Image 1 (cartoon, protein in one colour):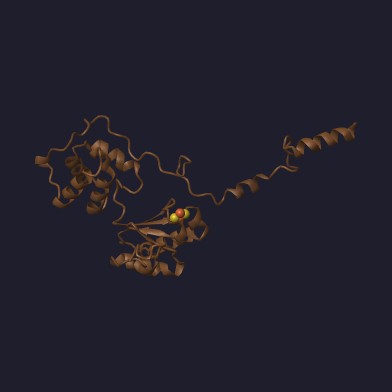
Image 2 (cartoon, protein in one colour; image 1 turned 135 degrees about the horizontal axis):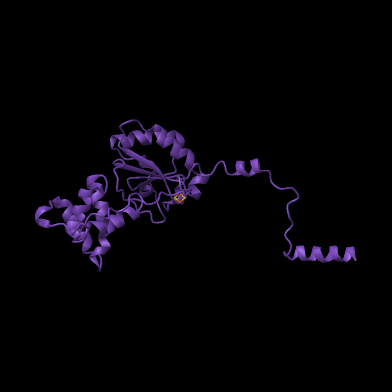
Length: 240
Ligand code: FES
């Protein structure tokens, strides 16, 4: 009878019905050690920042800025107006319009938001909601040059964490450079890579980092021979 039970259990186990319990419980120290390399977390336990500032409900919502009292640089106005013509609903130009203002002002400052709102005839609140949602729009000053080091899977497997540490380690006091990790930038074939103000560069070797940072500091072309746009694709004329 005992043999029969054993045979039945073996058959059930083979069919995946029985999951064998571990012979020994895993010691707690071992469990903790397994998590010691976890990415850093915010105080609430999340890996991503939460809401930055609560709205001040004691204030009246800002209205659409008055063009008569809101100076907007001509070039920015022209760029935003051009962007608005490209979408069936002009509001859809909010993201590129905010990006244009960020390029001019360095970040989506209250002044930048007001100027975009004035041209687009939107409330600042609408644009702040957009700017605070998207990762590449900054509602606080961070540094004029944005260096996003991709730390997603392909780049991670090719040393992205060390690359990000090296880039950050190369920065000096007073550098107007914002270096941060970023999720997949969609250029996994050149991992590990970074976006330098939108210019994709990779694969970046650790010993190229000092040159890269110095080029960024001087406003030079970052690692020109490693730029994605300079690579030959299946169409040899594509990036000629
Ligand atoms: S994982 Fe880095 S670009 Fe995709």
